[in-house]
Image (cartoon, rainbow, N blue to C red):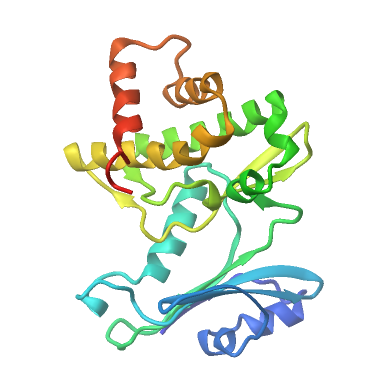
Amino acid sequence: MSWFNDVNQSLPEAHQAFASLDAVWQLQGKVITTSSLCEVLRVELDGKGYYVKRYRKAGENALGAMVKSKARREWENLMRFKQWGLPVAEVVACGEESLWSWPRRGALVTAEIENSKDLAWLADHDSPLLQQPNWVDSVSRQVAQASAVMHQHSFAHNDWKWRNILVAGSEQNPQIYMIDCPAGTFWWGPFFEYRRIKDIACLDKIAQRVLNKKQRIRFYQQYQNVSKLSPKHWQDIAKILRFFKGRE
């Protein structure tokens, strides 16, 4: 069994609660989401909030223990994003049972980002922030930059949706944070191109509902770091707009 606990002993409740995978499995808290694969809890320890994601098994892949678990892929991706200079929720503890254990449990604990909401929540609740051009432009630039950095590394998120992007900070200075990326990985050639288009198309699914055309085009310009779109860019945009047609 491998386990990582980065909580300082100056936070005794959290340090003990996240001391091992078994300890994390004993935690009780507010259930945020649950499925046959995993559950997410919110717990409060030493006056701080944490999100505990507990995977009950390796994942749906039939190879099971022959491949990386979703828990491992998720914490590795968050740490990878951090290395690339992208803002992420802080991983404070993570680990899984030994490679040949079946079914394989795993867990990921991240520190709560105070006063944050995910972009999908803001859209679903008609947040007035989405009516503020400066706020939208700032968040758009950050999401575009994060998208570009991932894709420059030939990495596709594969679930790059508004619900997986938190926003905190003031109305004048919003800050995004990336969460939940168990399906992201590296791709090459046409396989990467397909996934790249999918990432941007996933973002645009809600954007086309709550943002105007000018804001959506500006996001693409920010993503490509250009002030003027070329015919190739417009072809790219057409692929993005067509991606989900007939799929849903």
